[in-house]
Image 1 (cartoon, rainbow, N blue to C red):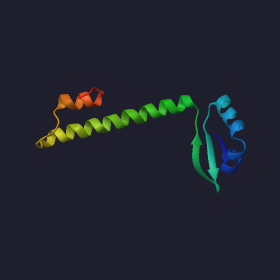
Image 2: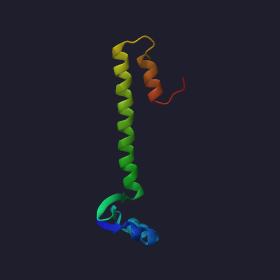
Image 3: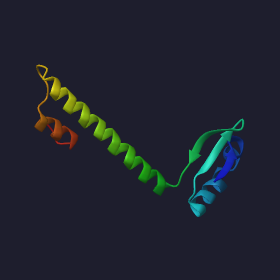
Image 4: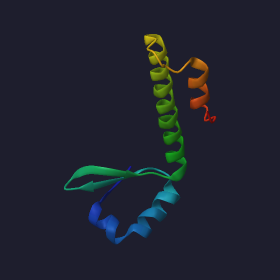
Length: 90
């Protein structure tokens, strides 16, 4: 994995993006000798972001279930919770 300092990224962004596209492996961006960011190819980002998005959806679903377990007055029933998670209006 390549490491590039932030100043070089600022001055040579086009070249660094070309290398990223050619190699397909992440590029670590450092500042003061510490890793501050990572550049990744769009394909990698999509794969990782979809996992993150699925995890967020799972957390919201589990929170909805927990709310139903408490049986507080005015709590949304399971059918409404599922419809909201699936993006249906209502």
